[in-house]
Length: 255
Image 1 (spheres, rainbow, N blue to C red):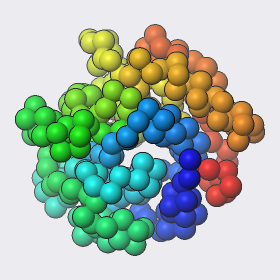
Image 2 (cartoon, helix red, strand yellow; image 1 turned 180 degrees about the vertical axis):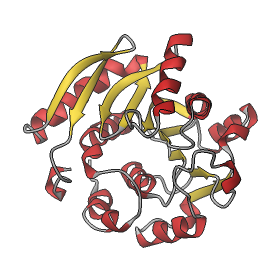
Image 3 (cartoon, rainbow, N blue to C red; image 1 turned 120 degrees about the horizontal axis):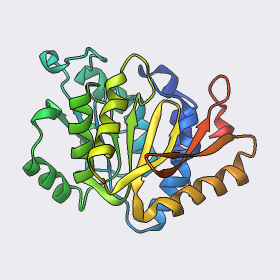
């Protein structure tokens, strides 16, 4: 499938948008997006903790939804940014959207503390997006409690065939993320399970699509990126690929 806008973004303004992610992520995201689109009409994307939009913009270009994309951030309400992990600015975020070819009308910007999101909010988002999000990123406050809360919300608003991203899973500065994920799997049996770890993000997918998505990634890497290094592991009892980025960001041809 064509990803012309995505490649234009990754090869251009991506480097100018402030944030913390690398192009290498799309070695795994692209085949997953292809698989989701093959399932039928895909949904928009959502994120808790968008900062200035570096990852968010890439996800919008990946799925191509012209409406329903949702950005949740405390923005100017910094009293709710308890760990100080990035101080998002709504005006900078909006300007970055436009600079990268995304009209503000395509994104619902919600200034909110994720700990205040309710079941009614989840229900409203599912209805407004026609069933939920195809891709949903969790990158808000990095405490144990926030991670568990935000993951719980993501599970309610992500489509059955969608992907959830958990940022900073192995980041030594934010151990609460890994602890929060661990507590979730030790205390519950979520329907979304570990799929891929790469470039500081843990990908989760519905158990029903787990093996199908792993094989889609492996086939994509074999066909388009035979130099890519990855290993099979088991994480919380589930098969999970670890995809290792090469030194430096990949060239445009590599994504």
